[in-house]
Length: 314
Image 1: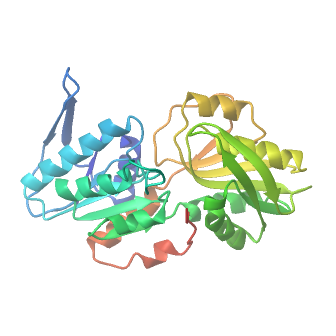
Image 2: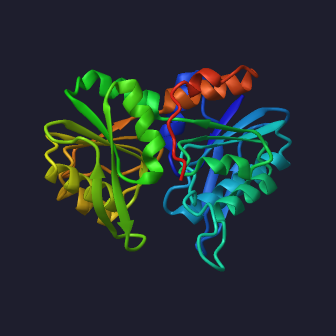
Image 3: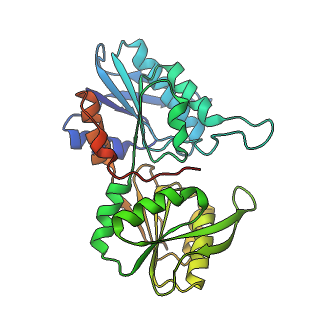
């Protein structure tokens, strides 16, 4: 088994290798002045079971292209099997034609991964679960929820209610509420644009309770912040947000600084700089991904890693 890392999240790859107990594969990645990418695999991979770890976080197109080039290099070096490990699957929000003359880019990315030479996909908390069906190769879809649950359990939150910030996240919120023994509420919203959200109403009992907002992804934090404002107005005592992939651009960070959210709990699926003015707790999913890689390599079952089945059904 050999594990290689793209440039998007090398600390996570190192943590995965440390968990498994193997050195990280040697790979040279060099950008050219014109923006092209050069990749050289610097060790023998002939006949090996190979894993490429790359989150397709911003700059998304660059990280995607780098990953395709790495897969192609490994395929041409005669690797026996190439598993692409995508802790965060970019373009997942473009999973359907919701208006005329638009692409289904999540499917295009799936096609390109297979065309490049990927034999298997390992990913986490897809924005839309149907993306698994975009592939004709095996897909193992993990959830960050077990890692989140262990942290939340230690906080001993009182009189907790789990809140879905939109209809699409209801299944994930329900799963969290079941394992935490908490109530369930939902915020009905209307989206103005890709970066602006107008929250409309909350369904469920909020007053006097600690609230846990759960979502798979946030970038501009519009949905989370609007939902937090609404449930604070409805009498929530303490507000936490639990988000698997916190991409967080400048707009999102600024909104969180001014928001009613007391703490943001997320994972290390994407690499982020330190954020001042916002309490962010980053939990590692390295052990979860590492255990999945070990089981895939040994052809063992990964079913027990899916024990917490939360997810989006949007």
